[in-house]
Length: 198
Image (cartoon, rainbow, N blue to C red):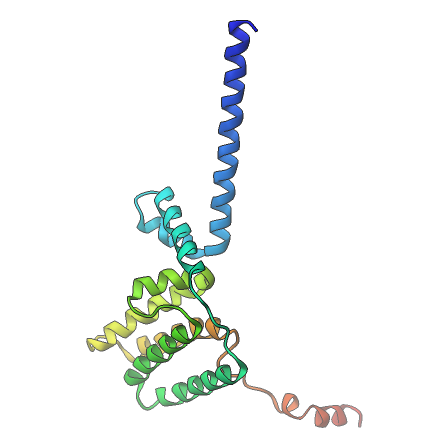
């Protein structure tokens, strides 16, 4: 092989290696974006660089894999749904206290599912791996809860906090915590069927 052929061969190998590395990085990035959704952009905005953010997200995946997560049994799911329904009813009479109770209920559910509940930022990091799409709700609810504890939240803020808590609560529960309102026809389908056959 001539020196020119050797140089060309080395350059081709370097270009192929660079393209392969770029494809691998793009694939990892796409995978992280799909898994973390809006949380990906949130972490990128918080970190100094995209690569630092992606390292953080991969670290979250690693720590999440070490958790022993527990699915809820039907009895626990029903108990949490009933507790949430009671909480929403209490909101009318005592919105400020209800937001604190919503925070406690969500924290209990998070703990029962097997997530750590100590530091809020650690809790967010662990939840982000499987519940990233509802984390902005949780952050907003937590912020309102903190403002409420300082006496700085309006009734509308408190209502929004409960709505935000409900988003993560439903995500963790795996279903809506309170059944949607039903129409008379849905409650008594045989009556609706009889009425249409007359």
